[in-house]
Image 1 (cartoon, rainbow, N blue to C red):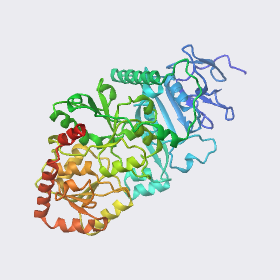
Image 2 (cartoon, rainbow, N blue to C red):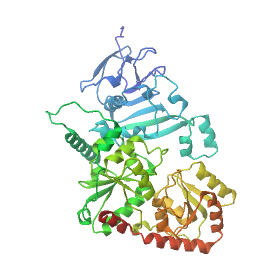
Image 3 (cartoon, rainbow, N blue to C red):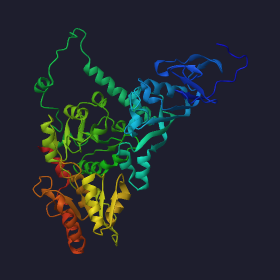
Image 4 (cartoon, rainbow, N blue to C red):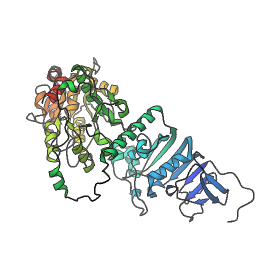
Length: 529
C-alpha cells in the first residue's frame, strides 16, 4: 500500500458499512473493498482490547481503534446484514465516548425492503432497541448503555397517503408496507446507581439459576430424550403460590409493572396495581408497586405485564414469581405464543377471568388461579364536570369490528371520542366528560374486560358494554351497566343518550355494584381457598 508521507489525523466519526456512501470526514469501514472503504474490517467479529485494534488505511496510515475514540458512529442500512448483532452493538458501545451518538437507519419489519435483499438476516421494529437501552443487563453491559435520543419513521407512499387522511399513527405502524424504515439515534451513557443495582440484581438471579441447574460432576451427561407429551405427563401439576394462612403473605409481595423502555401501554396496569396494593394494605400488610425489580428487595414479585418479558426471563425469574395474566387467551393473539405459554407453565399464575382461566387450563396451565378485579378507594379519582361534552368515549386499540361501531355512531350524529395510548390524568379527564363510556371486545374470545369496566364503575361512569348477561365474569356487575350484543350497541347508546336520568341511575348502580366487590375481600379469598 502506497501511504503518503503527510497524513491527516483519524476522524472522530465512523461510517460503519460505508458501501457506496463514502464520507470524507468519517473513517469508512466495510466488510469488503468493493466501494473502496478506508479499511476492510468486520467489527462484530473482533474483540478489541484496551490496547485497541490496529488497521492500515490509505488516507490516515496506521491507525488504532481504541475504546471511546469516536464521537459519532453512523450505520445506514447496515445492521440488517449483521449476523452477530449483539457483538456489533457491544463493539460500537465500546468505541463511542460517553455522550457519543450512534445514528442508525434500518428497514421496518413490515416493509418491502425488510426482506427483498437475500443478504438481510433480520428486520426491525419499535422494540428492537430494548436490549441496548433499558434491558442492557441481558447484554452483559456493566459500565455503559444506550439511551434513545430520537426515533423517527420514514413512511412509504402508502403511509404518506394514510397520514394525509389523518389515520392514527399506531394504525399506520401496523399497516403492512406503510412504513419503509426507521431512523434511531442512540446515545452512550454511564450506568446510573439505579442501573448498577439492576445489573447486580439480574447478575445474582442468573447466578442462582445457573447454580440451581448445575449437575453434580458424577452425573452422567447423557440426557434421555422424550416426546413433549411424555414430558408434560410426567411434570407436576404446576408451581404453587399463596399456600398457608394470610398472615404468612401480608408483606411478602411486590407488584412489578413490566416497563419496557418508552412503551406507553405499560400504564394499562397502573389501576390494577393500585387496587392490589391498597388491598394488601387493608389486610394489614403491604405490596409496593415497582417498575424496576431491584426495588422489590427480597419480596416475591407479582408481575403485571408478564407477556412483555423476553424469553430469557425464563432462566432469570425465581420459580415463585407470580405471573398475573391480563391478556385474553385467544390463539390469534400475538401474545399467546409458545414462549409466553411456556413461561406461564413454569410459574404460579393469576388471571382476572373465570373464562380466561378455563382457556389456560386447556393449554396445560391448570395451576392458574382466578383473582377477580374489584374496588379500592384509591381508584375513585375521575374529576366531576358540570357539562359533559363527549357523547360516547371509547379508549383502546381499534380493529375492524370496533371501528365499524364508532363509525356507525358518528353517522347517527353522536359525538364520539376515541383515545389510544392515553392514560392517567388525560384519560381520566375524558371519562369525566363522557356521557357514556363504551366497552367492546377486540378478540373473538370475547372475554369481559373487567379490569377496565371495574375502574369505570368505581368512578360512577355510565357504561355500555358488549357482552352477555350470563357470562360469569359479567354477572357480578349486573344492574350496574348496560350489557348488549354487538349488533345492538349503536341503538343502546343512542337511546341512552336521550335519557339523562337513566344514565345517572346507571352510574350510581354501577358504583354500588363494584363497591360491593372490595378488592381486599377478593384477595383474602385467594389465600383462604
